[in-house]
Length: 144
Image 1 (cartoon, helix red, strand yellow):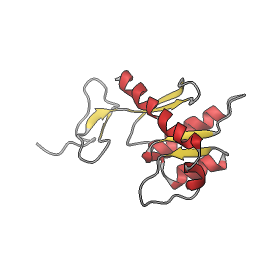
Image 2: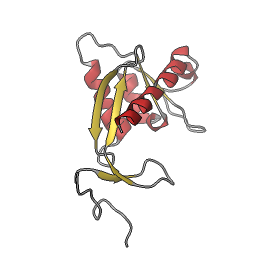
Image 3: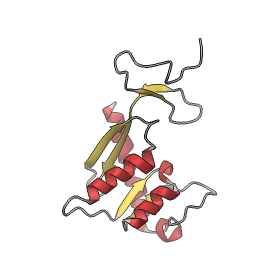
């Protein structure tokens, strides 16, 4: 039997799902990706997007689209965005800065990203964002 690939393997119940491996060493699974935007203040879900994880680069496409749509809502103000290490990217940080949003992405060791340094990571709000962002994973695990 050959190696499982998206062009040779698909779900019989949902052919739009894709084979996806979240990390090196983990098995590939037929799935969709989910992107959740929550409010730090009260932990409420502000937006959820289901997408194909291979077709759309999660941090730079789906997350930024969610943030942009939310910030355009009348009366909505986004000051910070908490995120995991997948969002520690120049494009994500630069776009947040362009929108006057402080990107609170978890830093990767020995990698520097312009616009995300000690001026941001030393703030109490950064630590709060890193603690609160874990609620997203709890929400995803409840969804299945």
